Image 1 (tube, chains in turn red, green):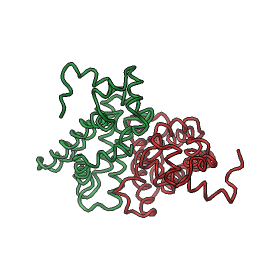
Image 2 (cartoon, rainbow over the protein chains, first blue to last red):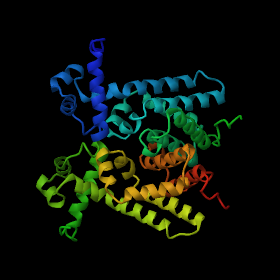
Image 3 (cartoon, one colour):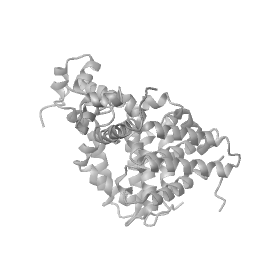
Image 4 (spheres, each protein chain N blue to C red):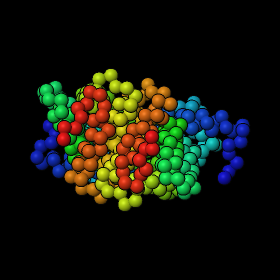
Length: 194
Length: 194
């Protein structure tokens, strides 16, 4: 790691990331250049380059914390022997992650460049472990589709204009209840205890 | 309309659209240029320009038929007085549309440029009418999240690698059953009759 992110650098770094996230939403990741980020900030491209040498660096700075958290959630699965608590904690953790990054999920999820970057990140395997927890072992077509609907719903939740009026707490509760309603009936997933 | 799409032009037009769809999947719509499409086809940019003058024209040619079909599905809602048949036919129509365009939905759904184009298309209002049919009138947070989860799931179904091994018929059946399981319990949506 280069010596970035010292206290005096932080505001400039964060302004780059904010401008980048705005532009990703407007033009897609692939349609955003370092020059566009500089123009949006009213600085030179060299000033952006001082913080990040490539767009890949910026994308990783934007999505990295969310990917790291996804790995933590998946790693916690093995440490929780109780089946019901394991399911509940994992689903709640994923939903918290989505809500913390409401704008981010859909903006980057379907971007081909981001997809290529994520394929090389440990979060890719973590995502598969979490999906396996949700579907149970050897899922049939019905279980696979239920899991795909849950993950699709979680991904779009942050950008669906119809959901914009829900508070974070309302969104968290309804996402949990709706996802549980789809997943609980699957074999290998604990039924609700209440 | 210019005189495009005559029988002799058709293969060249279709080859442009195929190359464009491949590149959209690899680089996003915003990250794809007419020059990249020409390079992929091994022709000059002028040859692409002979078929389509702007990238917007290509995007509309790619997504237009699906948007037109969405409008037809929404228009049929008013002509079906039976509540149960209205729900079933609309959901089945949307799922058929998704399956016919398995690759297309997620590639273009979250692209900011496509989103801007769709906002000016009648399909935008059709989408809202279909959502209102699915949630019932005055939906609460729970109904909105259920509908968001269904639409998110339908959108990702075509590109989720875990679903790639399902045939079109399996995917159609499981998407219908899973979506109905989420939507049927909502007030204003008919319960299953079987």
